[in-house]
Image 1 (tube, rainbow, N blue to C red):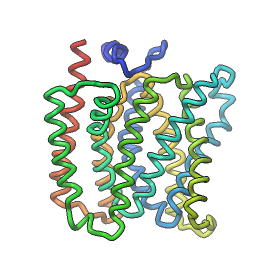
Image 2: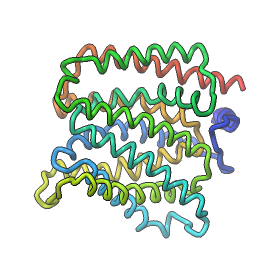
Image 3: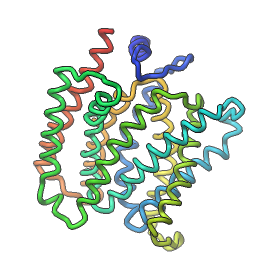
Image 4: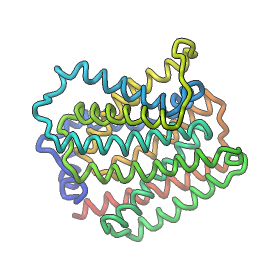
Length: 318
């Protein structure tokens, strides 16, 4: 673990804190972004069956931020938070949650949860190109192999007629693809600016600002009103699961990891998320899992492996 910290401390896109990250905290945080986030696709799909997507996302993040704020006297030292940190957290929340997660929630009205998770698994591929375009980070030969495999996997995944032939499928595809860019840029952004040192402050500010901005966007999109008392139990349970596990636990773990781990390392959650989402979507919602999807997933995730293993070896050499 100490070796990993020395590696990432030298990475130009990482900001390290003075305190050391406990190994158990790192492990639990990775479990949260690997497994819990993988399961959120299923529960978002359940929730948007009855609740308009932007309104559901707004309620999810507002409830989560309010819960954190209620316990803030025990968790947060607000006097130590700088104005610049609050501003940066608001910007990050808008990119991560309003634009990124909001678009993903919107997309799950039109495409299967496991299918959307597979597309999002290409995030390290997009992040690689963005780091090249914005930071001038060179793409090494081994990473180029990963790029080729990633592009092939994405083509095989999206070109399936049985999955993408619906009249509104293109809306979901465009929304999911937009997530790749907003989340990628947001990860690069938070690794360069000064964020709140407390992960609870960071998460609360991001979710609170995102919740209110999603309410405004929901109003502008004229989403229908919701009678919360008439919702099915699975819808209520899904929202509560997303609040407690998806937002408070997993998103706080995500922000915690970004304090100690480089953004492309954190993005390796895309290895596990689609597998979890595919299995849950197939088992609980009878979502279609074709052989072409399985092959595409294998090729795509192999490409992502080549991309990330190249980065790790490069840091180790440094």
